Image 1 (cartoon, rainbow, N blue to C red):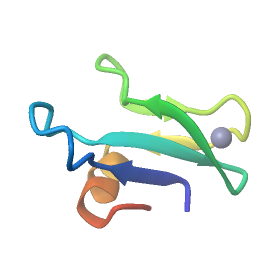
Image 2 (cartoon, helix red, strand yellow):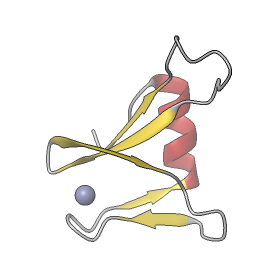
Image 3 (cartoon, rainbow, N blue to C red):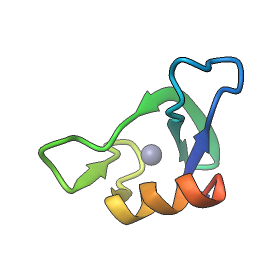
Image 4 (cartoon, rainbow, N blue to C red):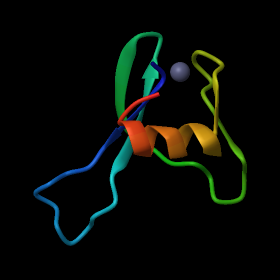
Amino acid sequence: MVLIYESDPLDNDDARGRFYHVCRGRIDRTEIQLPADEKIYECAVCGIDLEAEDFWLARQKGSV
Ligand SMILES: [Zn+2]
C-alpha cells in the first residue's frame, strides 16, 4: 500500500478527500496532491512514483 484516500464526512462544504502517501510502511500525514502540471508525484524518501492512475484508483478503493 502506497497511497491512501480519506474523505472527511464532517467536512460537508469541502467534499473532496485527501491523499496521503504511505512511505516505507508508515503513513505520512502530510496531505499530497498530484501536481497540476505534472503527471507523476515522486517521493524523494522512498523513490516511488505515483501516477494519476494511482490517485484515481485510491479514490475509488480507499487505498492502493
Ligand atoms: Zn515515500
